[in-house]
Image (cartoon, rainbow, N blue to C red; front, side, top):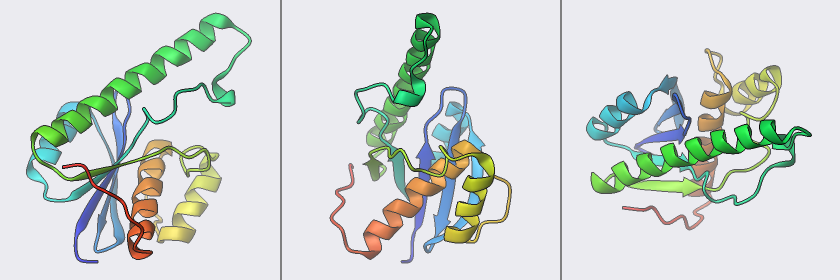
Length: 158
């Protein structure tokens, strides 16, 4: 594999970004939307983004006895979905190839911090700094690369 893959876990204030070069994780970082848009515009890569719009339900972990708390969580999810849509619209507009990947409940960003860091080190050899958003981006980038190496059919959006 001789290419750069940039995986994105969209967020409201900042998105987790994982960069893979020739199949190896080389960078984890957080980027706000303007910085991410600038990065996408000048970086030749195949992009992978968590398709947060794929799930049309509320995860059990997001349900709360207080209706106001549940509504606040739903609003936060809506903001993340809007950010993801803006990122995908931008990539389409600038003819950047990307693959949306459906969220999974077992990604490294949903684990507690120590488990997530261990998974990142075990699976990808990463020992640097990470947070739940960058680990989630790395998870989706790794998932995409594994599917490529198994020659699974993933149709990129261009």
